[in-house]
Length: 107
Image (tube, rainbow, N blue to C red; front, side, top):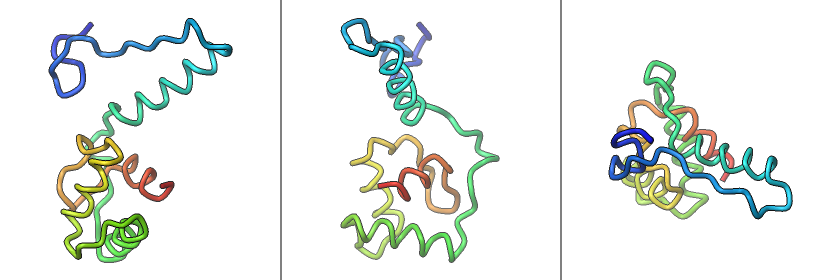
């Protein structure tokens, strides 16, 4: 337990992963931990990537292929991140968390 450590700071439960009924509990625990790390991990800000014109065009292309093409990169990225449950990993469009970029490229 970590005070305010849960989702959005609204809970003290940092992680609660249950795998006791799974046929492959160790494999399932690894999978769930990977998802938890994706959604709640924290990439140090100095490791975020600067979004120049080339990367902005790439991001816009990925977003457009997924139906987020209003022409406003920030709004489109926010909308996509909201559906991908990654909204807490955004901080504008000048820099992007490499985890978010990898998920955008993968989806």
